[in-house]
Amino acid sequence: MNSPIVSRRSLLTGITASAAGLLAGCDSLARDERFRKALFSAENMHKWLQRSLQDRDALAPEFGFDQRSPFFRGNGTLNPRSEGYKVLWRSKFADWRLQVDGLVGRPLSLGLAQLQAMPQRIQTTRHDCVEGWSAIGTWRGVPLKLVLDAAQLSTRAKYLVFHCMDDMGGGADYYESIDMVDAFHPQTILAFALNEEPLEVRNGAPLRLRVERHLGYKHAKYLSRIEAVADLSNIRGGKGGYWEDVAGYEWYAGI
Amino acid sequence: MTSDERAAPPPQIVRRHRLSTRLWHWLNALCLYVLFTSGLGIFNAHPRLYWGQYGANFDPPWLKLERFGAWWTLPASYDLALSRRWHLSFALLFAFALLAYMLWGLVNRHIAGDLAFRKGELRPGHVWRDIRDHARLRFPRGEAALRYNVLQKVSYIAVIFVLLPLMIFTGLSMSPGMNAAWPWLIDIFGGRQSARSIHFIVAWLLVAFFLVHILMVLLAGPLNEVRSMITGRYRLPREREA
Image (tube, rainbow over all chains, first blue to last red; front, side, top):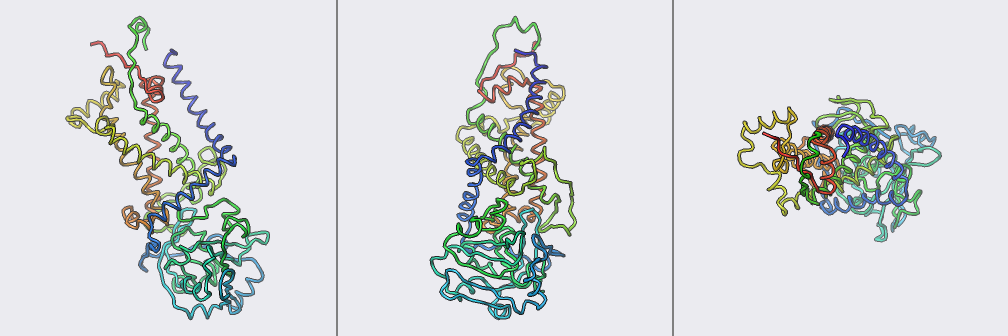
């Protein structure tokens, strides 16, 4: 047996070296396709566990007006750069339309005034960014369910794809998608007002999605079109959202 | 080991740790390593901490740090999505392993027999003696080395039944899906940003535990201690001569 001093020193060196080795090892492991698949599959486990523990219509916590953030910051696109968006903004979105199409019996094209004439829901909820910050604000909008009912959504539709007007670079507009559990959730609304003011550009004017049991990147801003589809694999990168395609974020953003 | 011990009779080797304890120990070592480094990677996305329900750039943080450097985080270069993938998959492994360990510890009486305090162990006199022994690096020998001493029990109980569950429950509180499923959970911690702050603080308490744990292993005889946690076999330290 070695003398304890030597073994202690070698153990310390060993710990330091293996910690550094482990970090490098983890990084190369994460590039291995099979390991990556296993690592990414945890998302499905979380989704299954959460959906098992949640009632289908379980509500996200709601707050009082006095619990709101003094300032509701924006994130992601703060000012869409496309000329088309700027033209719409200059006319206060008078010419803007929301298309509802895909697997629907009756495609819709709705203006802001038409949406605002529909029954509304007001909810003061917490917005949680994937980055870690939270902000509380009061949203006013039309329950998505009412729009889907009006469009006579087909039973073949499994997902809704939300197409946005903000170009993320290279002509790729932001997009997101949700499934029918969230589409028909009572707090899922198409919001046109935050804290009783029309949406600011940084918060997604003229219309954004609120899907309160998910992280912020699900809440698509600058909506132009809702497309009902049977599966997501043919849409853009196939992963159901801009950040899911580009950066590898979870499609199930309830985690 | 002193030289005159070489002439002594062969050391007594005993079985020290159960297989379940050893497996859980090394799985934890891996999980806590991955969770801590990927957790710092996630923290780097917004390196500020707040108390209460909300908190973002325009709200006053109680702690504002620079991003942790590449040698701290998993992956080394900033990648929030991949840090989250690591963190959220190992969180499942870690949480269910802890649950299994606790249940199995009840069945095989590891908790009742080894971890629970014995009668008289919490008397101030006994605790004080144990503190003095630790301070003088006088570790138990002979049969006494086969039992956890009271400071060990206090720290293991605090880690297993307080800190680790706190990590899991504050972690769950940060998930919007869980907020809808278990709205009472986030109320216990006083809001999502409080839960995030507690998660961060407890992570560092676990690092502190890890450092003291390693120090104790080094002082108590690293080869013997590490071997007993790998193979279960432990060389009993000889009784001190009176």
